[in-house]
Length: 357
View 1: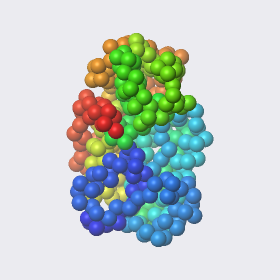
View 2 (view 1 turned 90 degrees about the vertical axis):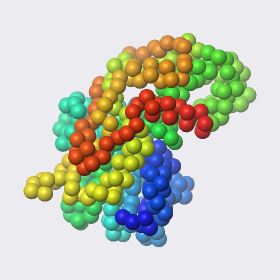
View 3 (view 1 turned 60 degrees about the vertical axis):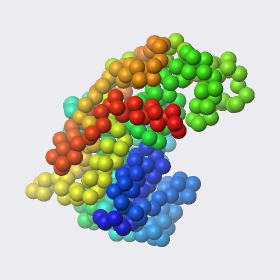
């Protein structure tokens, strides 16, 4: 891969894709191509095929996906399995048809069984039952891994799958209903602080930047307070799904991007498995920090950074999801890459980014 290589980034505006694009640009890669979802519907096979025929990318990064937190995954199950399978299948197949030199498929560590031994090694895949709440999304991502492996085996392509742990960073999704836990906590706790100080202008600006369902600019302060209450946000209390006991690993998105570009430049499919084995499987690569924190401790960390004085209510009637999910990143470490941003620094970075954007 050289600086003039034509690289297609699917999902360039999202948390993952924007971080990878930023990293590539910083390294001097100058021939990046991308399309918004309005410009190219990746669920439409004919449109994707036409795009590849016209553009002929040499390298492809699949960062496009329908993503969300535990609430969204559990609610919109059909959308999560259909959209993701269609997006990745269309891109992978067109990459094969048009002789793409190398493809990177980005998945998620939710592919692993609910009760997987910790830390989770790549060979834990498909050894037990998945977590129910995000099962459709996980199955879609597993199908992407297997599609890449199968095309490599049958067609001698060079398609690599990577499984980042829970990511956070610039261009994250802060939707109060559909976002992942860390950005959701940042926004909820920030809005709780605004209520403490009765900073209605700050709340209105927040709603303007990140729209809230059924809100309009004519809402009184009382209606705004009621709207936030419906999301479990008050000046004295923030509601959090589950017990707070689940342990989660988090990785700064720009660290993830650095790992992805490292793998694109230095790792081939044949580096991901034992060449002496007759069985080729579990070729994907975990990308993570190798450290974890409870949701409760994460909430208190964010609270201390933001300066909220209220308390937390952990709603134990809501599902916790998998109780512990920590990746084994020894495979990636053995290839020569490790993360650099710790969680506290990363949360500070994301909170400041959120306030400015």
